[in-house]
Picture (tube, rainbow, N blue to C red):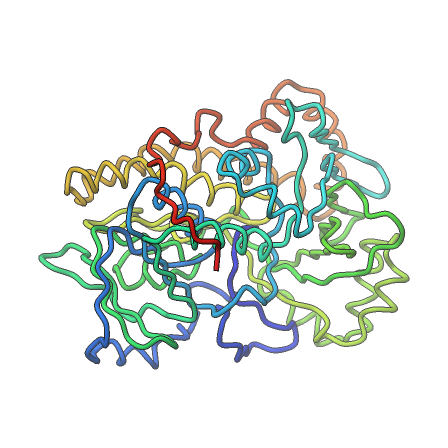
Length: 459
């Protein structure tokens, strides 16, 4: 649920919004930049010298920029979108992510913009709660799931970054190429509303999402996995009464449906469909789609009938898991969704992105101090993070089998399986793993430089 990319309305395959990236099948996607990459050959109007060029202003990129700036490094962040004023789907934070953000001093400000706590996660089948993950039984203070709109979090992170005079922010700017020398990445070429720039950097960090342009330019392959090979039809409904404090997956014999309270006053609904299965469903018309949704979430049926008038009221996302063939090259690191992509089950996208940023921070600083940006040095990040990421992938695979399997056999065995799992120590251990990720990960605050921030207020 970490992707901040392009979404399309459910009845079309086209999206002309300039500041978003299309969510569609990775191996058949038409890259939105392919017709404009010839601009990379033009001479840049400005050269920027920096320590780190971070591409992508999502949770991973902005968190990394902030910890690097607090450590005295020069950071240039390139973000294709010109503002955060667009829709995001990933907005659930696990306790591990909220704890890291709190230690950086950005959580309180982000929460003041609007957030909602969830006490538990439930798997519900025909009115029966099969799994009930009670987050309040975990150690405080971050013993809850937190729904927080990504713009709230990103704006808070950006404002903290802008307090540093060694920070250059290039919003509304896209990367058009990489600067390379003797097979090593030495920077990036970019173009946007501020003109064309050549950014010369000790290291480039690709944090630009599951359809990473940096990853493609670097010639790094990507493998789509079958952990979560689904499409999700997203829409919001107004909250009737007090917003629920539970994230739920409803089964009810059909396609599973995810629901949770969303800020400021709505319920986010995600209806899972077999990959590429929406076209046949939509061909039956909006009334048919509404009947299917009402059957899946009967408690929201009246609101569905009232609020969904056309297929354009729905957003179709191709949600998948996968990973880059490698996370580092000489002079280059991939983090977050650029390196590894996860489905929405378990709400791991933002969590893992923030943890990646915190984990790579001391490695990048050591690389800068030693003037060594070789892949052999930067590979310490892969060694540090891959076990945790792979573990989460295995957990998501298990969750997918329990929650998303359909058909008669799955419906028969799921209740018994859920009862066994929910009462076992394995489930309690899994809940902690889902909630916290890598328990040994912490912000390397000892590397922060006193007075690194400019006394100026955030812009």
